[in-house]
Length: 334
Image (cartoon, rainbow, N blue to C red; front, side, top):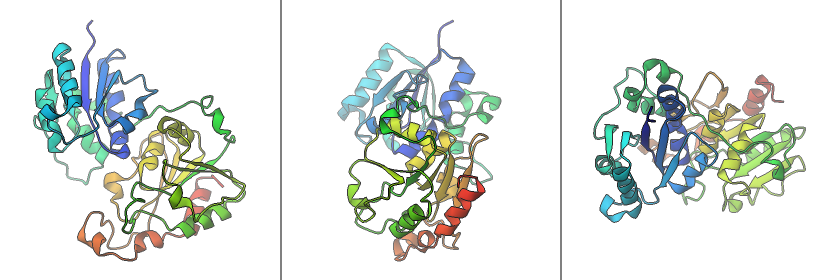
């Protein structure tokens, strides 16, 4: 029997890609282990699939907004599809730059904009559920219900070079907005992180962050002896493994929070201006997520005039260290 070939278009930030991984197991359950899945994504985030044999081929897309005729990467995707037409092409993006790409790709069946739109919902959906609605016509309702984001990272053996202890808690103080010159509305105060580190002196702690973020941690260093500093030291695929093998993670609402939920590591996430129902870590039958929030009347306010006018960031400032300690104790992590 000829295997089904499917092209997925999902580019963008790390969290966006993690949300979309629910489609992988869904397609395998529906079309069998031999289904061929190719994926269009940004080169950096695409590293998430470097150890994932569910993905056959990655088409890197560096500049999303370029029209097809100006983008050599988009032309490569279209040319490949002409030689190897797909059975299904699925656009999981909601922006206009990918509409023409889907139109020009050769595929027997096309889902997502401009060919189909997610069905409306009576309840406020999570981004994962919005994505699932886009590809719902490609799988059965039973398969759709069993589809969750899942990642495959580096193994324990491959992580030995980091000399990690058997048990450890990951701390992720940073987020993608640290480089901005205005208030980082998703950040938890550095003094809170320092207090948390000191109060967890009897635990092995691993601090993570991306490359180029040393300046952010300058005032927090040097770290105490019970802290392993992996700031900027791990690849993305190793980071997945580091988080997967952790006892728990304490993090703001950013990429590693979504990685943790997708590898079923207990997640304690600090939420302020963002809408946890829409973009928070996704709950599944195999993970545990603790939301730490002050639940102020003005929250969520992300990307609104309320946030722009905010000068004190109370929703993050007022999340206490005690509440994090309580959450960690509740889950049996300390």
